[in-house]
Length: 84
Length: 159
Image 1: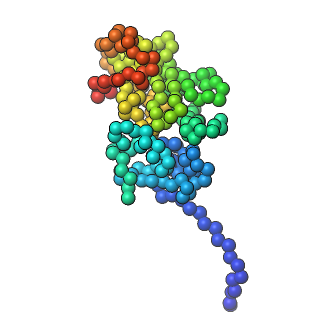
Image 2 (image 1 turned 180 degrees about the vertical axis):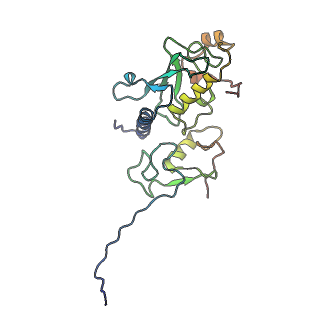
Image 3 (image 1 turned 90 degrees about the vertical axis):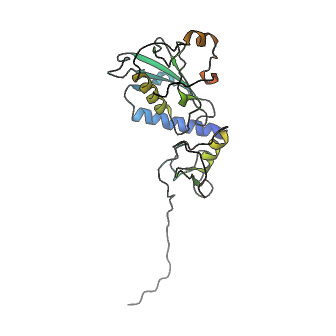
């Protein structure tokens, strides 16, 4: 039997691969965005530290900028370095 | 609850989530005094706290006042004991100010009202002798109203 496909529709979902469900700073799910953004996705990305903890980029940048002396990971207090 | 400033939206959303989680899964001896949450503002909370069983504070009741600045959770909350019963403890001044490093230099935005309350319960529970800090009289006479303005000198790592 021969089948001719005339049309198809695909649906895709996406998901961040984070080691936790929620951002430890704003407590919003990683699948949604930080409280300042409206849409999840590339506009409100996740970032990882070398310590392997993960946050919304907007949240961790605000924390780092508010720190005067040492910049530490909010979860483990190790010096914060972005994972490359 | 909508505010125009972006920091306001983080503040309110986070405090709402903390409030809900404290009401849904309360820690033993720690409860939020809902009468004090008036209007739309979540900027001040009163927490009712009970001394843990088997400790020097068993049977005692305390109240904690939490004040949140617009920069919370990047800025630590201002936390003091208030009301008629201020615990007699080497880390608690008679005006309600608490010497606890997570309330100032060791604050992290990953901490929460619940985490702060648990630290305070455990600070009280580890007490072996009920007494005021040695510099209580001088401190209470000279300190700012806001304990966050005090330059704390943390000298006891055992709590």
